[in-house]
Length: 359
Ligand SMILES: Nc1ncnc2c1ncn2[C@@H]1O[C@H](COP(=O)(O)OP(=O)(O)O)[C@@H](O)[C@H]1O
Ligand SMILES: [Mg+2]
Image 1 (cartoon, rainbow, N blue to C red):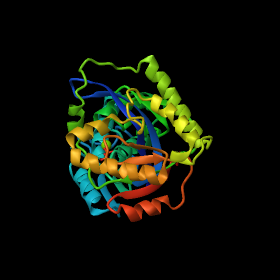
Image 2 (cartoon, helix red, strand yellow; image 1 turned 180 degrees about the horizontal axis):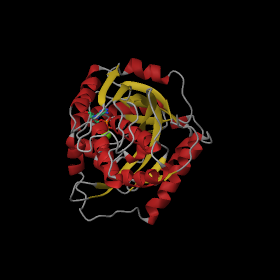
Image 3 (tube, rainbow, N blue to C red; image 1 turned 30 degrees about the vertical axis):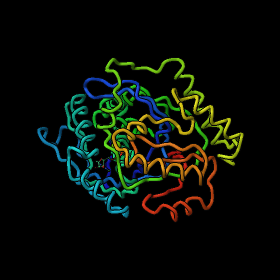
């Protein structure tokens, strides 16, 4: 590990789920799922400070260790700041604390020593939480990636493996943020198949309400028998979905959007990629149906917002994660659309985005 005295800046990107299907739910509460994760350029800025480097096993008290001092600042609307504050103030909810506990435990198991943890972490929060954008998970994953990058080679390899599986306990989307690149995610969230994409453009909308993820999971009523893997038809469908995204990013699809016949026929590729798409109008996220059952009033509002977005921007519209943020993938950036949406629907935060391509 190298000596660190100044603050290190880490970019923590948000993510979108382009479709999401639950394969099965396990008695212990984990879920097998499949989704395409897209990291986007809406991001938090994390500043990490270390005290003077201490050689493992020399000075450190092996019985206890100090968690870093955590703080955040934000100019998001008060609704989001309050939710984020609750996460920061409660170590049981705080994604960073949970991830650091796991990291410390595993490092200690492997080396018999305590790892060097940061002394201070300050985050400039720009990703609204909650909302299905994975802001808290990105903070945790990006921080652990930084710590892993500073380890000696042999320990590093083993720790990366171990952390990928163990971080699931702190959040199903945290392993993705160890290396945020477009990925097909299967299993409990830690099997990632990366694929290359040209830059994808779009618009996201973040409403001032969330859905209860655990209640929605319960309403899905999946059988408890694990169907852990995608079947061949699903794998093929995902390859088609990835193919659609590549074409969209490469602007090989007519971007006159909802009226473009090209786009319409091309996006059938996407819809075919998700089983049981009876409506054929949205990239399928099973949580949309769950939200209709569990939070009918909010789900109604959400669907209203989504159809306005589809009318104004066209493209492929869907909800991310367990909601309630939603997006349109538009191929190119459309001028004036975000401004129109902001004027029309003022209680939703609207942002243009592009896919994230590394720091
Ligand atoms: N570092 C963090 N940043 C934001 N929220 C956090 C953090 N740690 C814990 N939380 C809590 O986790 C909840 C979900 O946050 P987040 O993972 O960003 O959104 P989502 O799971 O909807 O994608 C927040 O409402 C907040 O209470
Ligand atoms: Mg989360």
